[in-house]
Length: 68
Image 1 (cartoon, rainbow, N blue to C red):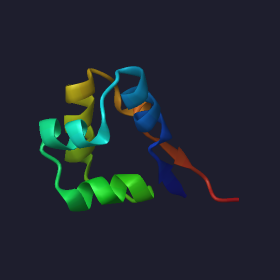
Image 2 (cartoon, helix red, strand yellow):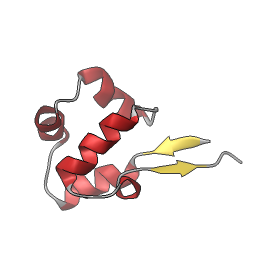
Image 3 (cartoon, one colour):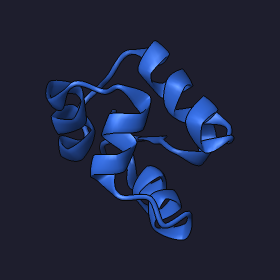
């Protein structure tokens, strides 16, 4: 299984928020931002901060994809 953050990137486009603005406003490190860009796992607390900032639910920013 792997995680996808496609929903996060789509939501940012819909809200007209750049990745740089998101990183700055939420206080994400460059390493965490890199993990998000690569589709790697990040801490649940990071996902919760993103949800708080974007006023959404966790399912609105990521999903688990099953490897076949």
